[in-house]
Image 1 (cartoon, rainbow, N blue to C red):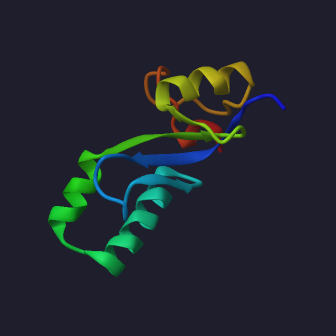
Image 2: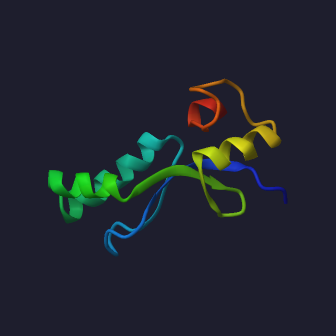
Length: 99
């Protein structure tokens, strides 16, 4: 199977075992909503929200289960003809480019 962009993802690394990992969604706002639900259950403070943002990298999950940055995601999406609309400067992939 050739690698394609599957969905938006936010990777949190280096915060703690509760938050670290890949959070998936159709759009990045959906990923943040998943993280917010975890925070509501565990620690809903603004300090934890800020720490989540500091440790987060926005990108995409591929069909091979790999996290890629917005820049690498754009290269993959262009190569697989997944872009349906341009968004931003064109160097970074946004979910709005895909659907």
